[in-house]
Amino acid sequence: MLSSVLAAVARRFEQPAVIGQILTGVLLGPSVLGRLPGDLSGHLFPEHVLPYLNVLAQVAVVIFMFSVGYEIEFRALRGHGRAVPLIAAGALIVPMSLGMLCVLLFEPSFAAIGEDDQGRSFVLFMGVATSITALPVLAAIVRERNLAGTVSGTVATGAAAIMDVLAWLTLAAALIGTGHSGELSWPVRLLLIALFLAVMLAVVRPLLAWWSGRSQSILRNQLPIAFALAMGTAWATAKLGLHPVFGGLLAGVVMRGKGSTPDPDVLRTMDQAGSLLLPLFFVVTGFSLTIDAVHGHGLLLLAVITAIACAGKFGPAYSISRLSGLDSRQSATVATLVNTRGLTELIALNVGLEAGIIGERLFTTLVLMALLTTLMTGPLLALIKPLKTERTEAAERLTSS
Image 1 (spheres, rainbow, N blue to C red):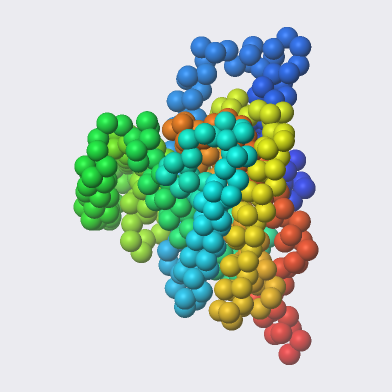
Image 2: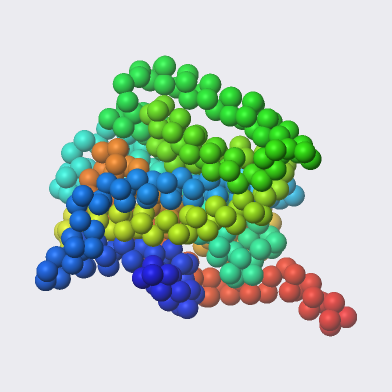
């Protein structure tokens, strides 16, 4: 209930609903409610209940990631030449490189907040944390701002889709060799992952397309198949040493099929299920936040990481958009949209925390960075005023003529 109220308040102030949902987790966690007399947070969420909440939160995230994969529109890349892949490459590689470089330049500050193990997994993870873009939040903003179908909206959405896929692959590489990855050796694990991906894309996807195309199919309703595929693929990726979120994302891409359109019933029901359970994810996330612990080196890292994350997105996205033929307003809109992080960033951060790559103090710092970069999207778009979309301008030209 509180999540719905705060999400509505966030929308009232022209902010994504995820901002209100994140604040729900912060308010109900130890940072706010837990500090009040009587340990209200502990009474609401006893320790023996937390494991069950964690399981439900994982299910919610898997369903959410299925919807993300199911909605990815690869056809949006067509018709814009090299702009979309170039923007995606620049807005991913630059902040990722800066994030990795940050580990080397501020090694003492990371060590001061408890990050002593700054090996390969940690460096890769910091690259992912500073470069990820929240495709679902971006898509919601595009719809809310009437940018759907415009050049800037389409380019930003297509670039975000590419960046999300590459960022998740990088995160998967970061997990290899951690305690989360299991006992299999790297070569065996990589071989099994490659075989699994090949089977899912080359065998399962065509079979699903064939089955759903049968007019007399026994399971004409695709929803049970979608849910079973999401849970089964999440289980398989977990067994392979990856996080279940990768399975959810892959299941959505496979279920969507090549060149097909999403089933409205599947998309609506999975979205509703995710919306119902997702507040639990924010509550669980809130229990890992220690906002009062962000001081000294933590504040320094928050400022540096936020600056790197923003500059690494704005600079490449704007400049490449301009070089690709977009005007200044369209380029600024694209740059602002791809800087949105939100829920996708939180999922990645939870993966890193669960795998032991980062500790709670850095986790809190990165969550605050995700909040700040998402909060600034609305005001920046209001400043840019991308209200006259291509459709509006065309209508005005027709009216004036």
